[in-house]
Image (cartoon, rainbow over all chains, first blue to last red; front, side, top):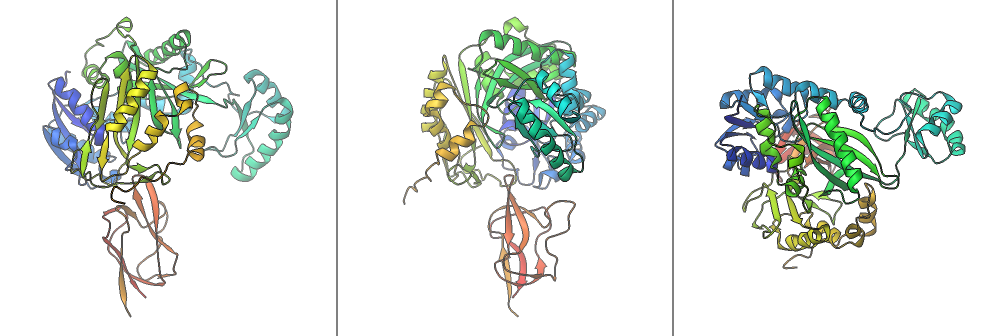
Length: 459
Length: 80
């Protein structure tokens, strides 16, 4: 069923992005808003607005009943979940479809399968996608641990079966370290979790985060190349690039082909991303998880391929076959996205909501700014701090870095402290220019390079 | 006894409990010591405790758990 009216069940910049794509497809848009979001940019742009609840997300954007009631009342025939909120909630997808509406995303069963780490890992392995080598269950005693570790390869990570959130993790570089650490880790796990069970996994010390963008129509899937998102703070991506400069053509081909195999094996529909950990020292990549939605950093993939991912995901979820064959997808140049957040990078990234008193948006060749801001907009304190994504493209990575610095210099968000100063410093950093970083690099860099507080204009 | 109205120092979502399945930090009628946590304000997914600056007894709350608050909005009345 081709979609004629789309309910946008999200907010901020991604709601704006979805409305733009829908409008180009001739689709009417209805924007869901909380009581705190009546003035947001997407609400101003949409053809109609439905208020779904109070400011608190649990009572509005995360409330399945409220969102469904709004979608039904709006007369829309499809729901776009954006990212975050209910976008990877299988029950929500199921209920949208049960209400006779199109869910702009994969089937509920795909969301459910990929949302479970163990199931996703097993499905990846079945599709021939490499996963992090591990013990496939508990290891019993030092002897077994030694045997398993030899197969996995050192260094190995010792994890508590009952643990979580990084607790009880130890790294053994050699068999002798393993012999010392196994009894310690087991005793500690027993004390902490009441269960001394352990399992082993390969440890990648300086991992890089690479991810493959895919598109599927339920039968056929293609990849739209990869992104690298190794610059992270507290596991939140800060800066993303496409393609991943650390990959050679052969590794890129193998990585992207593996993503297509997994996507096709689950009959993937819509836009999705497979996240991998890449060991630059050995050239190995390992599947981590799949995100069954559009991602924040999708624009860099659009910039290097010319494919509008959001428009295409709406088309295929409306029942159209994919408009592209794999050979139609050509990689061209290099794109960088930096997240402009309402946070103070000179003050422990404290959130900084406020009113935008004046706004200067960068422009010119190869520059794109996907944002929810407009002059006079009061950024509400109730949601995440992403204000916009500054995206640049150039023929080369070095050119893109220069263009990024130039565009950041043009950006001005008066009234709100943003992370733009952090990106300006990173754009000038020699390690960033050399592409010499990994997923824990930025936190160390921040400790070593504290940013000066901004000087008040009339100070 | 003098009653003082304590205002929200920052805008955000006000929480009276440390977690949804836990009891409230303070109820009406409870005594508080300076430094006691009375609630939390969530601003863009970061949590700031609302700490009593002086001792006294909480007479009334003006906001409910998970209410949206603006900076300067009355949170609770304290009898010193």
